[in-house]
Image (tube, rainbow over all chains, first blue to last red; front, top):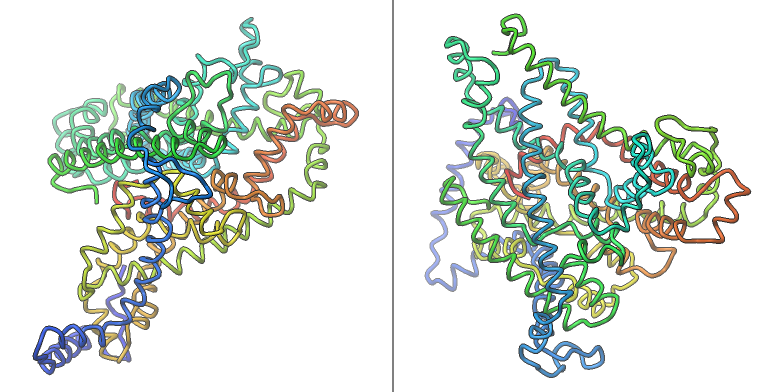
Length: 337
Length: 293
């Protein structure tokens, strides 16, 4: 990555480096501040540029991410637009009582968990299996082409994905119903049927992300020590045995970390795609916490109640992510961040 | 290690089965795109009658005619370019200097600032407080608001900071010898050495801007400000339950299905053009970021 031969000002890098570190040491010696205050002033005199560089980012985080956290207090207030966040009266846990006696909210929590569970059961193994299969393909061009194609859907927007799903599952003229027609099955209006929402949603997710998700596992496979395979060949093992006895055990740490991340993100269902695919007829299986918040808050204007639901969601997610990080630290000695 | 000639009969069988399965998955990935392209070039009647499977039936470009004459289509297309280019430049303007400062050991409060940024990955206030904050900032229905409010995220900053930290100290010291200040060190030493990482972040920004939908839908009201994805959504929703349109289309050669498909094709084309160039970066990039995301 770094071109070692590049000289700076015509001098070879090593020489410059030696000179530079000596000069820096001399400079450090020449500063002998007498008090901690003088040291601090001195520090900012020398390093002010760093703080100038950092300031815009810190201000951005304060304005766009931390200020909303202050605004979260409306979850405990009777919020009115005219009074604003600070002046609305406190109502304690009233919104949370309303939430937990609201059947639709409870349903949304369960739907979130159910969709995530399905994603975990079917969506999690898919990229691992795909990576293992890519690893068995000898033909380089075929492999490269297949990879290029299966990575592609990751870069397509949810609006387009939803457009494709809507077109493909259309009751008249949609390809899915055309194929079912060949087998004599009557046309089904899939997107209005609650029992079909989750299979279609999870299936779409696998179609879109399995390929891209395999990159991480392919990298792990590439890191397996080749001598393991060589000695297995000497022992007369076949490819199937090598996959089970060498490849899978070797990438197990990666699998474990990815699994932990997934569990940490259980409350995060890609609700953008849900909004694009669900309709009142399928709310009973499709409505997740964030879509419920979207309808209650942004569409119906019940900001305080929706903010309370958001706070609940964020707290559960926070606990899950922290637990996941602790677990991964324990198993892999490296935390996720 | 893998040599076809050394394979036993069982290994060869296994390799062939795997190749067929991968081939099937690849075709299944590609097929919906081919199907949509075929629908977009078919007549409205053929599409509704369920005749389109692989190739256009009664080939026509009527659906494209309908969409390309729509002024709103071009407005939203232009807006998407503005959001993508403006947003990506804005992101880099924040992230590159920010990540550099955070990567310097001499920065006081470095641990605190890092935690301050990382915390937003674990906890965020949610949709409603974010929306109300945007309203308080007077950034509803503002193109600049969209560009600014989604410019930074913790993940990209941490990714670049880690990369900067991995650059050997000696490069900085050498530049300092020549009297370079922090801005010069960043611009003349770190940025050139970090091209792969910066390219990756640029790619992430471009993709998320090009595809951005939800907040654009929520925050923007004026038609002349919406990006392509919102226009696409409006059109799909409008076509699927507009009786007036159903009457018009019988006379013309298109239908809701073919027009939807045509818009999908039009908005995918730029992605397909850029895709081969970015591919080498995202494979690297996803590994740069470790296993996060």
